[in-house]
Length: 91
Image (cartoon, rainbow, N blue to C red):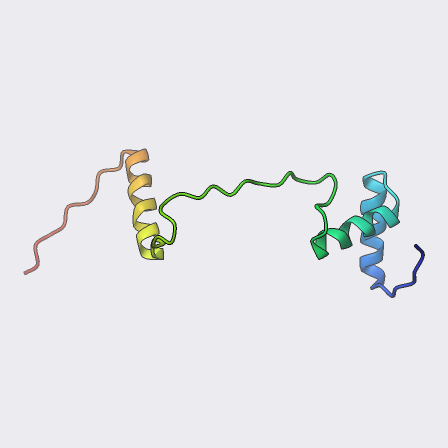
């Protein structure tokens, strides 16, 4: 279907270059981009999708940012074999 839209000239130029680089028509590129934006299908080419891995109990509690940071720090220290500093007793 043919239609007319007003696009920012710089955006249109980038789209034309992208289409040329992928050896596709501008129409195909814009059609796939709009379809992906609207969620009707994934864009062709590009990066493959990813699988979200979910662990834990349903409706379980998510760790707080502080808990995540502590776990990451523990893993980093363990992987680097860095000795933990000794804590001094309070005066």
